[in-house]
Image 1 (cartoon, rainbow, N blue to C red):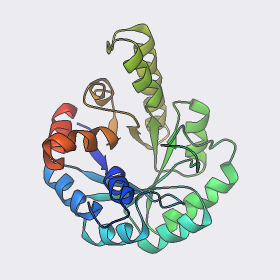
Image 2: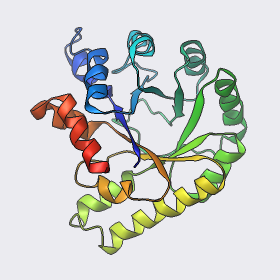
Image 3: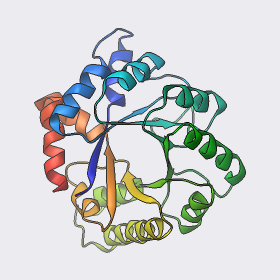
Image 4: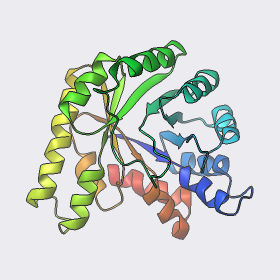
Length: 244
């Protein structure tokens, strides 16, 4: 069964909406762990729109699950990661105007720079993943730059699932699932870990969770939305049950 990574960014988003001190992402991490989270994911954005430096520092000191830091491949973020040393860093593209991450990294176009970033992070003892589309060229480039894992962007699949009747057998949905499956096989053949995430929820996660060799699923928004009604611990436990 794939491990569950829970992204708690949106707990910090709620805090920042009032520019106050609650709810605290550190408390959220504890509840997520008690619900069965295997990985805690946070995205320290350059504009600090939700997670901030204090959150990263405290979470690094307190969480028992693996801490996954999503980050842009910038000098500032690399320096922070090398100082805090989370167990895992996932490099993602980042735009100031985007609401959420809109696509995978262009590893092919930035191969030289990313090779240096990956080397620096791995030199600090950090396991490095790249967030990429289900594109074999990008996966092959990720292997060349030394990535330990690729996280496949599942947004196109989630969009197809939403627009085509939530039927995994529908051609448009089945096509997206097959793309992810092929990408996952290529990742594993190249000696990297196969992770996936983005826009997954309680309805669409099952088809992805069943893919061969999938190591981790990273899910945030849907779990935090469910937590509004049942609490974060229960919301995580329900998603964990979906994976099995």
